[in-house]
Length: 132
Image: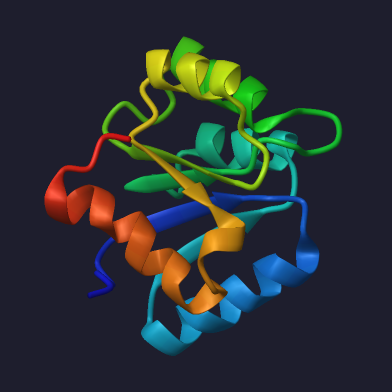
């Protein structure tokens, strides 16, 4: 069940996929903010006008990877109470180990779920305490 009271920031450079997520979020009445790159995600978080409950990061993005964004989030303590998910198709063991050390709560492989189910997976973090 999708929780419309939660704010979600999704960071991914795949514009088509993000448009699908935006359509789904609008249909469900979700409070979703999209960032197409790491810099924009950090600008959103530093602006403090949108404080997400969940941040979903793609790993592979041009300029600044999802791991780079995650490191800055932690260094600057930008969202101390947010659940962090890696939403990617490219996360090897080394990346997953490092991400767990940085407090990632869940890994979601995009190819394993249709866009209509991604939010259910994200919200499972807050529903059942999933930590990886």
